[in-house]
Each structure stands twice: as structure tokens, then as C-alpha cells.
Amino acid sequence: MGVLEYFMILFRTVLELSNRNGPHATASPPYYYGSSLFPSPSPSPSLSLSPSPSPSPLPPPPQWTRFDVMNFGAVGDGKTDDSTAFELTWKAACKGISDHGVKIRVPIGKKFLVSPIKFEGPCLCPNITFEILGSIIAQPKSAWKNKRSSEWIMFNRVEKLNVVGNGQGLIDGQGDSWWLEGGNARPAAMIFSNCKNLEISGLKHINSPKFHISITDCHYANISSLQIIAPPQSPNTDGIDIASSSNIFIHNSTIKTGDDCIAIKGGTSNTTISEIVCGPGHGISIGSLGQHGKHDEVEGIKVSNCTLNGTDNGVRIKTWQGGSGFARNIIFSDINFTAVENPIVIDQFYCPHKICTNKLSAVEVRNVSFVGIRGTSYKWKDATVSIRCSYTVPCTDIHIDDVHITSTVPRQPVSAVCINARGSANDTSSPIVDCLKY
Image 1: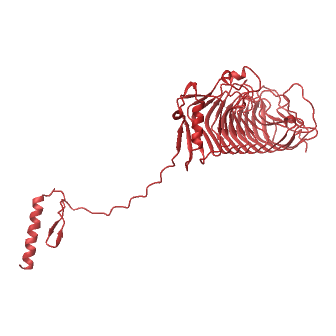
Image 2: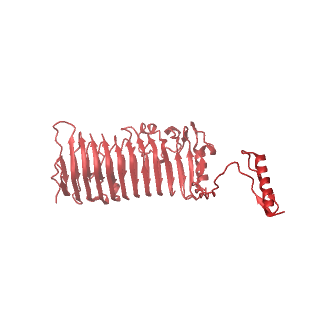
Image 3: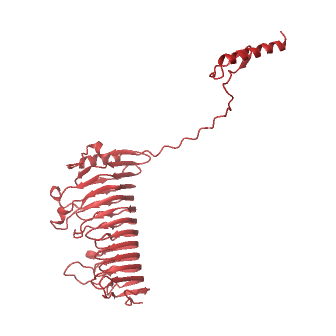
């Protein structure tokens, strides 16, 4: 057989197979003819593209190890004491090991009745998130076994603790049963002690028997987006108390209580407070310092961009006679007042009692600035600006700049009083501050 004849037979065979399969036939396996391979005919011409390489998979999101209080026996009906379930949850979480930390969950839509409880560290995991989406409610005073307890909920020696509420969590101290019976032996609602790298955010705190939040011996804390509320006449219901702590940042919160919105006490340094809405209450305070002859030190405090409404005091520093130490390097700036009593106060003679003993020693007050302060005041104890300092340890480097405060009472003058205070005043016409010594 010649070469030409061979290819003619081969061409007829391929054509016959093509007609047999039809124009819409699906692909069939290749056919072998002798030593040659011929692919099955395609129904229509197509462009064959090499497949693109698959993209690299994204890394998985951090995996939390989760602990829900409901899985440890909590009921959440607002009647059953869930303290044991919370203790068991904490113990399990604190021992949990996870590269990304563990999360304790207090679920939404539940009310958890909890007796005095302590969450103790240190923990094995690198950080713990305590997510409160439901409500945690204290027992009324009649149900407390130890009615002289100083705390209700306490976190101690826990590093990298995040207590978050996402705008939903509620802490209810049921303080009315304590306020009515009087006395000073009342518990603070939530205490953080001996902690580092603390975050608190998105919670609503109401009606603590005493302080709502207490920060003691803590370093590096970010506290934000809180609502703290108690009746104006509720005693000692400070919003946030800070003592013996450093590098604390408090911002974007609303505090309405019966005492100081924020109180900064001895041993505190490098603390920034901003964008706080305060009132009713007793304002934002440094102190009190030096009580019972104590040595107290406070420095590096900045309070800015805050609004105070109807508070008994505005921004103030209060120290007892007979103490020692210092309050220095403090700035109050860009503060707005509405109907505030005693707007600007430095008082080295602080004494809320009827009988007070004069003493020679005092906590030194130095390098304090009041800058960009505006608003209204409706009454005051001594003056709109009151700076009353010790005869033996006078206040020094007191600077008042761009302060303009008017009275809510028509034609009532505003005034400034200074005793043993040295410093300067600029651009301050209401009141006129001409009593500082240079």
C-alpha cells in the first residue's frame, strides 16, 4: 500500500467517526490507530488555558478557648445564687492554655445573682477576656454573710485582663439596701488589684454600695465607654477610684453618682482622663491626700476635654492638714461647666468634719495649671476660683490661663480667692484672678 493510499483510508476513517458521533457529541476517550494517538473530536473549537495557581489560604482567625458560665452550672434567673458556677468557670479558664488567650462568657438575656467573689491570679494563659453580656447582680445587704466586707467582685494579680460588656453588660450593686442603713462599712462593687495591662470597656455600672470601680496597685490600664450611675444622694458612690497606680487612661465615659466622678489618690502617677461627662456628683478630684498624717504622692495627671453638669465641685485638689508628700505636675484643660458649684478648687485645709485641728505639716501642691476652662456656676463656698494653701507649705507654680466662668444668677459677680498661693494668671477676666503672688 502506498503512502498516499494509507492517508486516504485514514482520513475516511476519521471522517466516518466524526459523523457517527454527531456535532453535539460529548468527548469520548482517545482512539489509537497503530502507533498513533488521535484525540476524540471536540464539539466546537475552544481555547485551552492553563489553570491559575490557587491563592494561598488565609491564616485561620485566632482561636479562643471559651468558657461559658452556663456550662458550669449557672442558672441566670436572678434568684439562684450563681457564685459557685462563676468560681468554677474562673478556675477552669485561669488554668486554660491557649496561644490567643481564653474568654469567659456571661451570656445576654440572663440575670446572675452573685455573692462576694474573688477572681484570683496569676493565670496560665497569656490573657483573659471576661465578656459580660448579661447582668450580674449583688445580693441585698440582708443576704451578705459578712456585712463588713470591703468588696463585692475582686480581680487580683491577673495580667492582661479584659473586662468587656460591648454596651450590653450590667453590673448592679443593689446599693440602696446599704445606703439606707448608713455606716461606712460598705463594699466597693468591683476592685482591680495588683494588675498589669488591664482593659475595662462597654459596661454599665449602677448603684454600688460604695465605690463603683476601684483601681489599686495596677499599671497600664485602659478604661473606656462606661456608664456609671447612682442617685445624687447616695453616699461615697465614687465612679472610679485610683490609688497606687500608674499609666492609667480613662476616656469616653459618663459618670453620674453621689460622690466624686473620678478620684485620684495617693501613689498615682502618669494618668490621663479625657472626654468624661460628669454629673451629678462631686466633680473630678485629686485626693483627698494626707489623711491621718499619711505621706501621699501624686504626679503627672492630665484632665482634659471633660464636661461637668450640676456637680458640687468642678476640678479640685484636696489635702488634709498634717500630711506630707506632694501633688505636682497636674493639668486641667478644656473643661466645660454647667451650673457647677465651686468650679476651681485647691484646698490644703480639707476637712469634712465639724471640728478640725490645725496642723503645721501639709502635702505640697506644685506646678498645677488650669487652662481653657469655661462655663457657669450657680453658687460657691468661698469663690468661683478658690485656692487656699498652707501657711507653712504654700502652693507654688499655680497657673490660671484662659478661664471664663459666669454666674447663672443674673448680675451676681464671680470672684477669686487665693491664700498663700504663688503663680500667674493670664487672659482670665471672669473672674479676675489677681490674688496669686509672683
